[in-house]
Figure 1: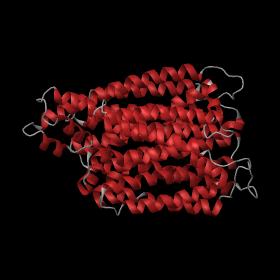
Figure 2: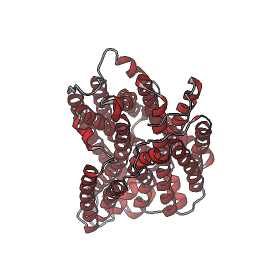
Figure 3: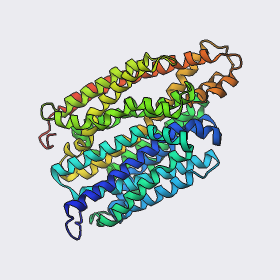
Figure 4: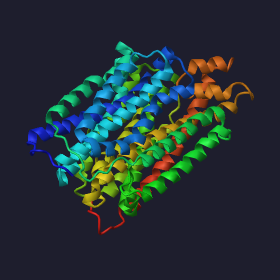
Length: 504
């Protein structure tokens, strides 16, 4: 790797770390914040349930599918250049989003925002890796992970306050000054660096990975409306499997693969990937689904919803630092698995909380979920670079980030489709066949209760809320069971010895 023209002072390194942290704060706010704004965006721009789902999924799909390619661009053309380019584009697309009047173009710009996020995040992480070594690097990457988590968690809270006072556009524009500050810090303090051994971009791998992930997400999102047996849905899902297989074949043959599959020979590296994906369905999906439920279905205001979400998000401000202290007495495997098990208990508790029940019954469940997921959150990024040989830490970090971001996008698509299917099943049990159940289920799942009630005619609000509560509870039970299985798997795999890997 190329070195900086001169060593940076401690103050300059802190400024570089601050620049990347600010970028890592803005990106996830842009993911979860619009979930609170979704009912307001639907009222302002219209759109079908599928188009509304793309408000969140377009961002995460573009972000997750392009991270590894963005990392290769940073190595080839300069980490600082790619970081600053990504930030500038992100700010431009954020400004444009506040001006559009059509949901189709809103979704397109959300995808563009995701692509620019990948450039900024990959360039920033690669630049940061040049500034810190050893334990300092592990601490820096852990801080980035915590900052990313804070952005994910507090996006709904900030957006709720902004929307209530200034409208939904404020939730989009809030990240622009954060991005501008990160750009200034990076422009002043970062030095340009490249990988002298970089030999171009693995375009076949990048394109096949992106196409496969896109087909998978599109198929999952289209299934509730068209049906899982529809030829288009089947074609998309089968196509994604085939192209993922092609991607694997490509990566096995290229000299410098975008995804080094040999890293998966390390059992503990596999455990870290499971750990990266675990918060997606035990925590992150709730940051999207709960605001839709509270605002669009139960009728809470944006501010009330933001206040309730503090119980879920608040632990991320403190518990990761507590987890770092606990590593003196407990292994990372124990802490991470215990945290997921606590989250599973919280998910099951939340599944018993029906719409209309007192908020006091819900808040402890939200706190348990947030507390549990916060235990592994601050350890994950550091583990990503410590469970493989040092010379492969850069690739390991890229794979970890891709697993986390792409996993969140896929999890959101699957969970949204599953909620719609469960809601349709619950509604069909109390409504006559052919009464618009499928379309109504999609409307309720995206927070448009008024439209669903119009379609279902004489059906009362209480009947729909009861069906929604049962469907949401069933979904949370499934997520709780998945989280328990993942916790046990991580505990087993992370404790497998590997003499060639640094012990975490």
